[in-house]
Length: 306
Image 1 (cartoon, one colour):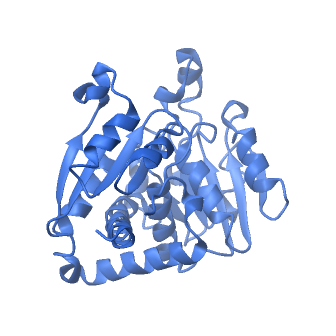
Image 2 (cartoon, rainbow, N blue to C red; image 1 turned 180 degrees about the horizontal axis):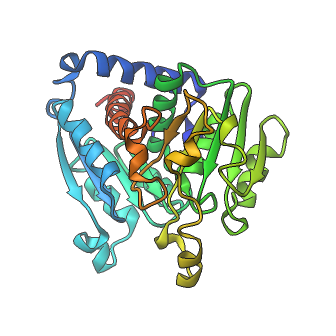
């Protein structure tokens, strides 16, 4: 049985096949509308979510399957002190596949050791968010036509942003990728990621402080919000939350085919005036998330023999 805990669990070939399947689902939705009849997806969300949870649920429903689960730890037996291991062991009795989000890093990995059904990590603390990464890869490929030879700017909260961490690791295996990290010193990418991905010199990156100094060089701009829930100090959050805001003025210097991504939710780091710019991809990105999760559910159920 195979789980998806980290984007690096998948080979490049497996990722490409998943993206191909997602593209086929987009082109032939009726063909897949009954693929999961009689199957159940459990969404175990110990941390609040809108897009990720609902896109998983929509994905399973569009495949003809059913959904059960909870949307916060307060509405589960975790509030009574039940362990993650026991929760997934029990839920495995009721569901064919499980999508799990948890605020603690490593919790989905523990769940995978105990569950009798495939586990999909839907986000664990500041660590990984592999299905968002698949969403991002599908969006970049559909917008740019490739996943190599790209200059990608990551802007905002690069220290706690699990979506950025997962994307960097996934893109590290494609040729001629150059990352430009745009953040204040306090929110630079963590040392573990530098050591894990950039230390061998095969992948290039640079660190800058403003969008303006690099936007004309970017093929993709990946914006993130400064996440209040990841801060221990409220004063630091308030001081940094408005540091980087993308608006139409900044975009005047950008390439005409720039692709602007954002994992959402947005607070104010992208001005609403940007929404009408054809380079704004983030709502298409959210839709792509449903299709790539449909592809992943199909693949994992097939490999589990369910």
